[in-house]
Length: 111
Image (tube, rainbow, N blue to C red):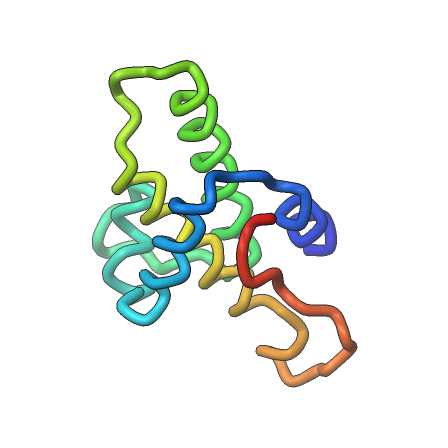
């Protein structure tokens, strides 16, 4: 998990995408949106937050590559949805969310 948080801390993304992802947190429904974002069947159990975070980060990396290469398949809405899910999952698997209170935290956004 530490690797995932350190990776999140080093990501650099356009401010508009990050702000949109933050706003999406208030409407984010893990049970509804995570299966769609990860391409999971409806009847399957959802992965743990840490596992979901790793899968989401792989998808975000692909979206970022497409964005930087001006790929016609890139959609801002998809990128924002993935980034919103990443923020949610990072918060869900942070020590504070588990009640451990170790002083480390999930990042609020990409730098």
